[in-house]
Image 1 (cartoon, rainbow, N blue to C red):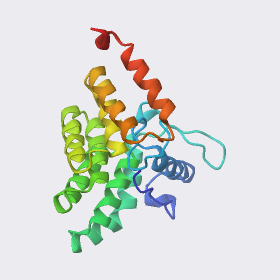
Image 2 (image 1 turned 90 degrees about the vertical axis):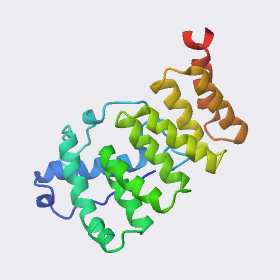
Image 3 (image 1 turned 30 degrees about the vertical axis):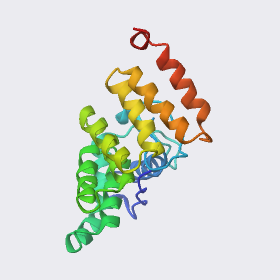
Image 4 (image 1 turned 180 degrees about the horizontal axis):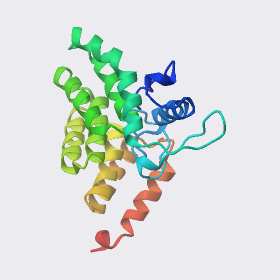
Length: 219
């Protein structure tokens, strides 16, 4: 998954009340573990939670309240966390590690267009970076560019035909984004063929069964 941004030192960094700033920090840490929802992202052993609206996520603050965070508030958090890295990147524009960290911060706070831009910069330097390309595909999908996401995954699979993340995401985007259960089943079967000991094999098999039972697959 993307790199998790750290907790801000003061609430004034984001311009938000202290309790809400802590809430955003907690969310960022949480999203560092599960960003992408049903996507595997860059961690092939991550869980596969359900797709849910980004703006409705809430997190407990120290006083036990659960404020709902807007995307704008999360962007404020991302901008603060990324600012120092962006400055470093200006002096070292070909530093892939820095670019990936920046992209990860924006991805983890659901700023997918900003994240995509930094993943694209990473790939301009290191085009065979399959992890970055898969994360870019996820960002493009959530930005509404389904075809662009599939194109990135296709390219990733040219570099590594058995990459688990790319195969899983290819199936999910074809199923959810293109209404193509046949294509999804093909990708997921290839995933299980390449990784017979996948720790979430049962979940993938369940998704295959669901896709095969859809009206489009039966036609």
